[in-house]
Every structure is written in structure tokens, then in C-alpha cells.
Amino acid sequence: MSFQKYAFNREPFLSDISVQMHGREEEWEKIIEYLNESLTGNRIRSFFLIGDYGFGKSFTISKIISEVMKEDSTITNANKTLIAYVVLAETVTAPNISWEYVTKIMVNIGKKNIFDIASNFKQPKKISFSERFSVIIEGLKNEKDEAYKWLTGETLDSSERSSLGISSKLQYGESLSVLMDFLKFIKLCGYENLLVLIDEFEYAVNVYSEQKLTELFHTFKNIYDYFVKNGDAEIYAKHIQIIAITPKGYDHINELEKKLRGKTGGGIVPWMERMRFERNQVSLKPLDDENSKLLLEDRIKKERTKNRKVSYETFPFIKPSFFEAIIGVSHGKPRNLLDFSEIVLEEAIRRDYKEIDGKIALYILSEYKLIEVETKPQE
Image (cartoon, rainbow, N blue to C red):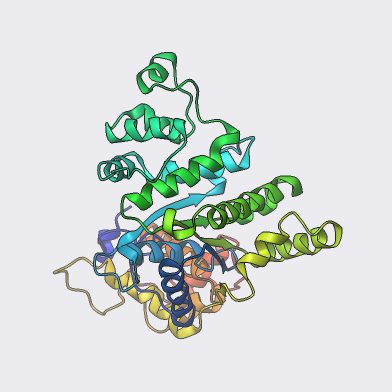
């Protein structure tokens, strides 16, 4: 589609366009406070990022990743933090939830990063690993694909197992100990933290059975307990989590905790108590009108073709009518602001509109059955 018609390099409302956050100053301040406390402290912590569908959880996570990975990041120990971005809904659920969690972490970190980390590894005499993981470390140091495949749970053929010097793939029952060995391994390579960002956690809440969801939280608790009982931050890099979830998903977790607390006091109760989620959470609210407008304007400016003159700054979107219309029907939801604007722009290109005002925007959205409007604008 020819966005050049309106002097854009490409579609300006794509969610992956890197622009400033608007209307999230208070939430961002709390997230930065959590990161600074967690990445410099001596204990494992978890944090809930709560927001309904389309309220910017994934966008916020992408900003967290960018901030931590910046060379001049203001977050303490950012340069000593390894990031893993996990989306539970991306693949078919594995039979063992601990194994799925661990292997997804390894997949996301990636082969090149793990090989690079291993190149800096030197094992002191006082630190030991399981026999299997020691073999894997040697394979990683020698950049053997088989070693990385083993970490990610792939099945190895006989020649790969022979080359690596190992008898079988990563087993379900050893996945937690492998994660702890991995945390010990990256600690010796200069990392203080493994920051795991879990997106779309509502998938687990909606799809997993109560038993499986409980197993997932039990995995988190076991990581915490293993860390505390076997050396703390002196031995291991810390396992830090930010978990993105919808309000309904968060309510479901709290209801499950109450249910299990009344029955046995086990299940997810110990982990929830350890993590103090009444403090360690932030909720994403709807954007106000001003910040909604800034969100749209930033993307328009970002993708404007350089050295191309336009009749006004937000061309072809007429101010204020286009913005008032889109903001009015989006109700402060960032995804609606972008999706509605994208639909209107694409239809305007197809219909060869020279400019786009509020009436045109509302009529196009009504044709898509997204809103109701009575009159057709003049073309």
C-alpha cells in the first residue's frame, strides 16, 4: 500500500514503531523503582504488570527491554542483567510446566548469546555443577550446536549425543536443577541477574488446568527456595520476573490462592506470600485525551518522509476533528487508537481522499462495524 501518497515512509500506526511513552509516567517510575531494587538486591522478586487487552502491556515490556539493554541505561546493574522474554502462548504446551518454562528461557536468550557468555567462563575450584551440566558447559565453550539444542529441550540423535558426550535430551525432572546450574553459570560469567519478562500470562490462566497452573507457580516457588537454601546471590544470578497479565487473570490468581489457602495452605500460596504482590505491581489505566493525541502525533512525525513538504504537520489528518473522533471512540485504549487510525488511513488511500477529517474517520469505522454513525461524509 502506498503510504508515500501522504508523505510517510511506512504505515505510521504499527505497534513496533519505537516512540516515547505517553501517559505512563507514574507507572514507569514504579517499574524503574522495582528494577533498581531488584537488580541490586539479594533476593528473588516478581512483579505484576496489570492491564486489560490493548492497554500497552507488551509495549511497556518492550520499553523495559530497551531501557535495560541501553549502553547508557540509568538502571543499576543493567549491564549485569541477562534478559529472557517469554510468551507462554507461542507454542503448544509441554507435558511438564517446569521443563517448558526453562526451555523457553533458553530459546529466548538465544544460541549466539549463550555461546558468547560461555566464552567468558572460568570455573573456580570451589564451585561445582551437576555432571550433565558440566558436559554442557564444555559444549557451549566449544560452540557446539548440540549443547544449545540440549538446553532448549530438543531431541538429539545418536551422533549428536555421542559428539556432546551425553546420553539423552534434557529430562523433565532435571529442568529446575538445570536452571539453577545456569544461574550459577551466568553468575560466574559476570551476570548478577536473569530478568524474565513473561507476556500474555492470561494464556496460562485461561488455558491451563487448575492443577497445571498450580504447578507453574510451584515451579516459581521452588526456584525461590532453591536459591535461598543453596547459596543466595553469592552463588547464583538472581531470577527476577515481570509478569504481564489482565485484571481478570490477576483476579483469577487471587481467587485460586484463597481457594487453596482454605484447603491446604499450599499450591500457589507460599509463592504469593513470598512475592508481596500487594506492593509489587502496577496497573495500566486508560490514556487521557491529551496523551492519546500525543501517541498518534508521535507516530505521524516518526514516519514522516524527510525532506518532503506537507501542507501541515499532521497531514493528511485534519486537526482537531480527526483526533477528536478517533480519541472519542477509542476510550483511552492505546491499541484502539492505533488500530482505528490504521484502518482509516488504509481506506483513505484506497478511496483517494486528499485529507482525513473526523467525519471521514467515523464513517469508515462504521463501515467496519466498529462504531455506529448515520451520515456519509461528502467525498
